[in-house]
Length: 293
Image (cartoon, rainbow, N blue to C red; front, side, top):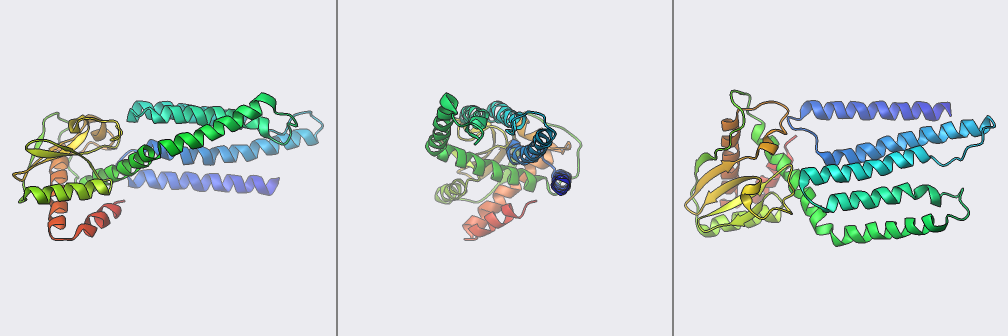
């Protein structure tokens, strides 16, 4: 027991160090999705500790069941609360439903432990809920997968845009930012947009005189109906580039950056990516995005 406790303490300390390093290097707040693996990892530690505590009580003659009820309930609450938090952040109803199903299923897990010879109704509902989770994920897989890919690449865009910004002389403003012009034809622009969309970098919205390239670290791109609902870059068929960032995305930066410089950086990024595309260097776009730390 002594060795297992030392091992658990070591793992916990190492995980804490990793989180400190990650948060110190990033200019952007940690994604809410990171709470899942962190929460599950932490619950595993509590699970081991509760098992050891209950074993000690049993060995000392105290009559307790070996099932770690406390940890199971805490994990169930974590899934439900995270589902609600994701609803408020992403506005996608999939997350609260999935969180509720996972929470209810986890709460009933104690009834299927070997200790119970006849789990009864709770054992049946546990397996029903478990099957419902699998079916729900399969049915909504495209939305779940697309959201994760879009958010990951949106975060990469925001990190890339902030890399060379050190000035912090003003804050957020509602006005669009004129980012200059680029040379393009209609077919080149549409091909470029299809490439970005196909790689889950932006979600496009097509209008009469321009294309709106939408991205966001907060609101799910799977539930928006207009490009201007989130951060976006508008590229006109005449080559004009306009940037508009949302207040929610801007507030995700851990420090107050120059808003004009940030918008100018986004314009430069998309003009540069478009230049890569026109020259046939599409792979450079993905390499540059994936290299952002």
